[in-house]
Each structure stands twice: as C-alpha cells, then as structure tokens.
Length: 157
Image (cartoon, rainbow, N blue to C red; front, side):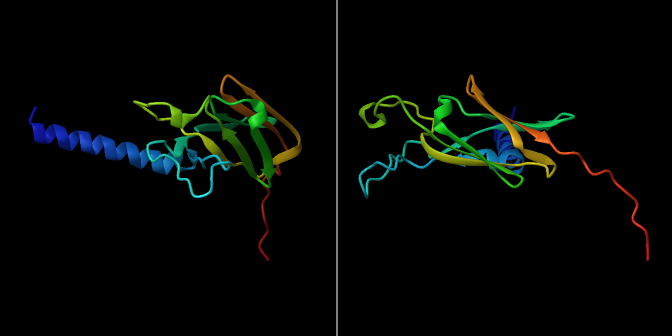
C-alpha cells in the first residue's frame, strides 16, 4: 500500500473517532480536579491526566429510568448523587492508593481527584423512590417514572 494513502486513511479514521467521541460522548469526558489539600500554589504534575471518560448509559423500562456510569476504583462512600429537576448529578473523589509523586510512572492514563458528572433525564421521573447502588465499578441509579400524559388532539379556535 502507498505510504501516503495509508497515512491519509489512518488520519481520517482518527479524526472520525474524535468527531464521534465529541458528538456522542462529550458529556462523558469529565474533568478531575487535583486534591484540594495540596499546598497553595503547588501545581499538579502535567503528566498526570486531568480528564477521564466516565461512560454512561441510560434507558427506560415501563416503570423506571435506569442510569449506569462506569467509575472504577471507588467506594460507595466516595459519591454524592443528587437529582436537580431532570438532571442527575454525580460528584465524587477518586483517590489513588499511596502518593502518586513518590512513584516513577512509565504510563499514566487514570485521572484522580474530585469530579462532577451530570446526566440529562427525561421529564417524566418521580424523584421520591430512587435506588442507588455501586458494584464492580458501576454506579447504578434507578428512578421511578411518573404516569405519562397521553397525547391529545388540540382544537382550533
């Protein structure tokens, strides 16, 4: 294969992947803020990621809206899950085991620190009976649906 065609094809596939990530998953790209207990003025290591992908899926059944978000390496006590109208807000802090700066890294793709992730939900949710669980790195939120308002014909005047 012609090297120029190979490079052009690889570039096209890479740019398409980024376009798809940004158009379909831009909300999943989550900013992590370094530990607030750091000394004033101390910058985080530029080699440590400050952004990470917290991939989510949302679907509905006859009676519920289910949201699942991949957040590995945490404990359920590290989360603050709240509902604001039709927006689910997940806040947390992902901590590293030990001191990151005392290690010599050859690869670092995981982000650590405080984060906030929001997920837009349909309007027909009942915020009273909610179930939140965390298992195997997956945060699951189940919200009951309210009775949908059936469509009706509007008369002309």
